[in-house]
Image (cartoon, rainbow, N blue to C red):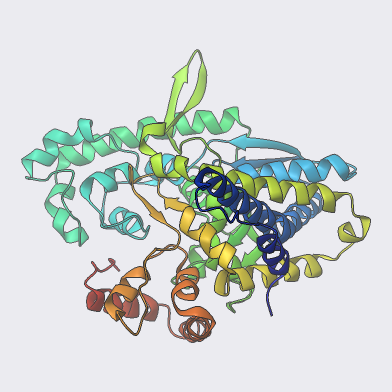
Length: 461
């Protein structure tokens, strides 16, 4: 069955009338933009609006149960989640509503303080994040290290920033260099001190009544903070999911509100993760990712990525903004609806999972168009981006290798449905369900076999 909101999108499409005059190109162009804008708004209002609203309501209920006084939404993906929660609380009376704050943390800004040394594990952590082939420059960026500071040590080992890292063993001589590791140790201490001061400034010490709130998936930021500083910090997430199936890597004092792999491994439970890159592209703030910190007039302030490195992200921002408007308008409507607010946690969670399952695996044409317009980026890959759904008529039967290459799309299930229709989407669904029953190492092995056949670089395991 088509998911809630698809009918509304189809009706909107019928109401977008195209002029018959062949010479009225400007009017046609404006009408096309109007139709696209209407579709984007309806997508946010009808489909994602109830999902985000459900998360916000479940979040404040969880905060009340845990007696949390502050919810610290993590930049950048926490931006929309915070605004939705703020609008909910505006209409929702709570005896002790939590304070909502916004904190500049990122995987990149917390990675280096969590390290003891630069080693094979540090390479594997960077390689696990999809952003094209891993280079030495990307490895340094992933851990917030200054290339200029290390350039002499790199040149000694005949390494450049564009050196491809197919295996940690390629850097074994560099890692054995005591002067290189001394520079790393100094950088760790400097960044750890700045991060510690920033956390204290934001009231984010372990054991406080503040919880981190983020879109999630593996809880990397919370894990980094736990490694860098003693004590336990609470994390509340839209979803927690490890693609490799190793749930031990998820933070201990954490909860995935809509999706948590520790509750179950079925595709409904994991639906949010399968639509994760779409959610991230819509939820993230328009600012650059947090690169690190510096002290200004006695205050620790975040260093953000410059706009020049985010051109693709900025170009797609208009689409995301219209969708966000639809989501927040629906949030306002539902927040005033007493019957909606009285739903149980299970009802809200199941409704969100059902909608995300349909969206992730069987997106309607409007959702596919949106997926081709939005992009995925990574903070350590300067200027790198990828459309959520790769474009092109890569039909599996006529050009199987090209089609397999398209499976590198961030929204993989959306790509499958857009190129192969509902039939192939069902096959993909079955394959994912089967992989979920296999040992965790099976997925990367099979993925690398497909990559080799498609002529793509394999992913380091």
